Each structure stands twice: as structure tokens, then as C-alpha cells.
Image (cartoon, rainbow, N blue to C red; front, side):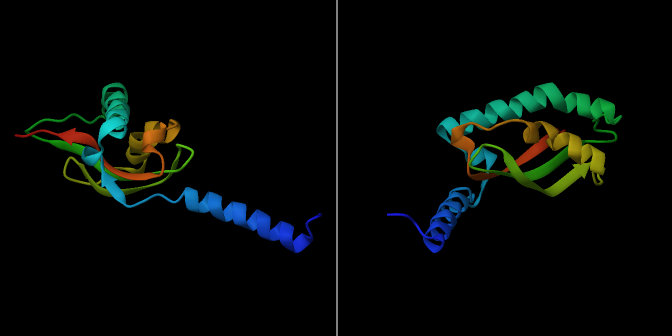
Amino acid sequence: MALNFKQMFMLVFFFIFLNVIACVPPAIINDYQLKGDAGKAWLMIHETWFRGEYRDILRKHGLEMSCAGCSYIYIDVIFTIDCRGRISGYEIVRENVCGGRASEELRDEMVRYFKSITYPAPLRNMRIKTKLGTGLSC
């Protein structure tokens, strides 16, 4: 039995709809709330960024933390990870760079690594809130 145009359209629409539904991420979860494989995967990704990128970013922008001047350099970000393991969007919800705002260039560099990688299965279809950077307890 051959499908007519209307049936074919409905079938294609149905599969597109299923794909869109499958890629809608759930509510926001804080990175420290991730457990098991998801928690381990996120920790490894974040530590790789922190140890390999963060210091270079600070140096490039002439930023140095000290209790006498600049005690915080961070941005809080909500990353949306889609069903393919890619960042489909992000929102910066808080920032503190030496008591002020981060430049657009600094923000872009802080999230670049996270946008460049493919996330493992335990982190897919998630919205993760995380702090990129740190502060000193003076």
C-alpha cells in the first residue's frame, strides 16, 4: 500500500516532533548535585578546563587575583547540553571580575572550551549551572 502525500507529511512531522521532544532538556541542576557517572564526567571536564585553560585566560587578560586588589574572577553559567552532547545554548547568570563585570571577550573565552567538546551520554539532555573561575577567601 502506497502512502499518499498527507500520510507521508504526517509521518515526517511525527518523527520531527519526536526528535524535538527527545532533545528538550529538563530543569536546571547545579554541578555539585550531579551524582554517579554524570558527576564524575562533569568533574573531569571542569577540572580539565580549570587546570588547562583558566590560568591562561587570566594571563591573557592581565588579571591576577590577590587579597589586596582582585579577590574574585568568575562567571556563573547555565549550559544547555542537547541530546547529541553539544552545547545548544548558555546563559551567564552572575559574574564577578575584580568587583565588576567581565568583558565580552573574557566571557567568550571562559566558555569556549565547554562549547568545543562533545559531552558523554550521562550529561546529555541537561541544563547544568556551574561556576567558571574562583575567588580567594581573604
